[in-house]
Image 1 (cartoon, rainbow, N blue to C red):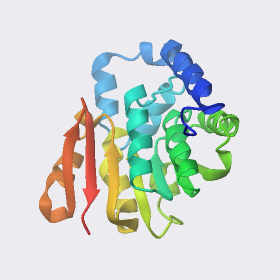
Image 2 (cartoon, helix red, strand yellow):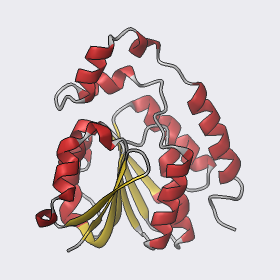
Image 3 (cartoon, rainbow, N blue to C red):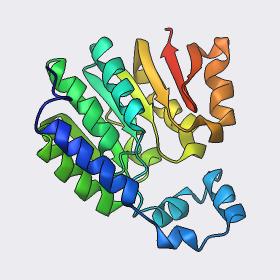
Length: 218
């Protein structure tokens, strides 16, 4: 029996995925596909783009959520950093692992206030709110200081163009053997080039459809 597969977490996650599947974004529907693609890759207009997505949940897949739990449990993680909390589905999986590891802290970052508020409600409902700090604002600011000295796992699932920059903020805190999970890496060629280059201190492999799993070597 685990926190992830028992109540209240199990039914909460099922309910939230159903809501995520039904969510729509009328604001995004009015943006031409070429402009969407530009915004997705922009390092300057990402706040504008993700404001258009404020009604979408943008969660990791169900399988990726389980993978996050498995990785965090296997690593015996006690300190986790998450870029891109959204409504908190990935956060619930990671916080469940922290609970089953005996406790710890998860520091998340989300710039959309409405998402932060609902994510906190979901974490409280799941019984893991005491393990999570969600920092509201631009992650390039909120994750630039006051991080745990030794981070066991970093999840990158926010603005894709910023994966490299966020990794740069957290990198000195990653302990040897720390895991970095990056979702939707089809949009992150610069990030992939960095973590796959041996001289940068990672062992990195593509996993599933568009996930990159990397381990900090030193």
